[in-house]
Length: 134
Image (tube, rainbow, N blue to C red):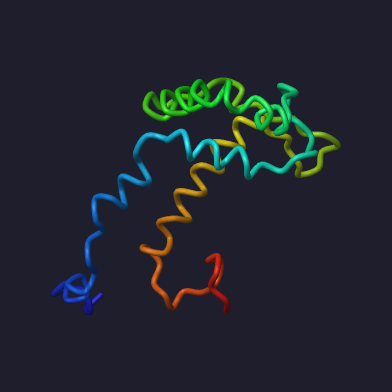
């Protein structure tokens, strides 16, 4: 690769700020978990533990601190509760019912990534970016 021998292309790449990494890798905040719970679709089948999204929405004030603690502990330790790894497949279709707590954590991570995509991906990239049209 002749074009990269002098690393001239790297001179044009600006480093990301610490706040970008902090928003991705920092502790999960209470408001991030609340936003993710409110984004859950209601009237969907619950996962193996039987708790639907409506339960989390109804009991939000009672469970939000515990849920945030569990998420942060799991991410710091590198392991999550066994329920995060449970899924139930029916009729051999490519459909897996996941527990709502798993969906909440996935939405938190997705929201964090969406916030940073505007910084990481250049404006010329239009496909698969919310708010950008092809």
